[in-house]
Image (cartoon, rainbow, N blue to C red; front, top):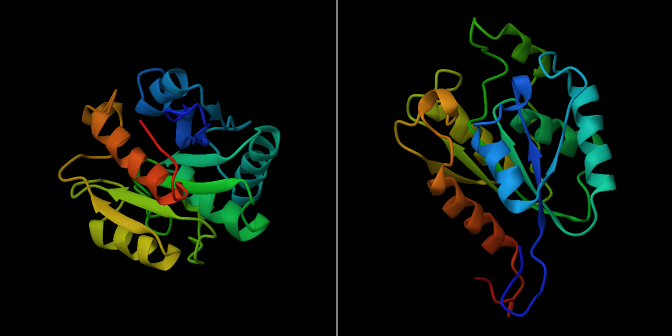
Length: 195
């Protein structure tokens, strides 16, 4: 991604949740579309704060330039744990945090999410936007908003959008690209011209 004058926008870093977001998931489509880096966990169905945060740190360190984290589901607490454990990173300029699960009240079909508890509630060291759904089976809107408030993040309700994944009909997710532009806008320095 570049601005009109050829300046570089931050590179996206995709931070998937459980199962690593399949090929039809908007995260995978964005990886292809935007040439994003991707965090691939050794055990994508067995999250732990230390190992998942450490892998995110490896990807951040290995990816040059300014970065925007794009996390979904269990990737969201991964970002929060990473920020707490590693203090963020000077090149990470913002984050789009979509459908955070309630790791302290996990859905019975996905008990592994409880391994990410307790949810870090420290303010994030970069601008962030939390996107939640009114009918997400993995987190109530109230809990999602409380996470956003604790992290010092902006909060957007996406309506009745389920878990904002393939199962809820979100493949390309063009509305998400609009929200991504808001995160980029929060980072954009004065005088920087964007498409």
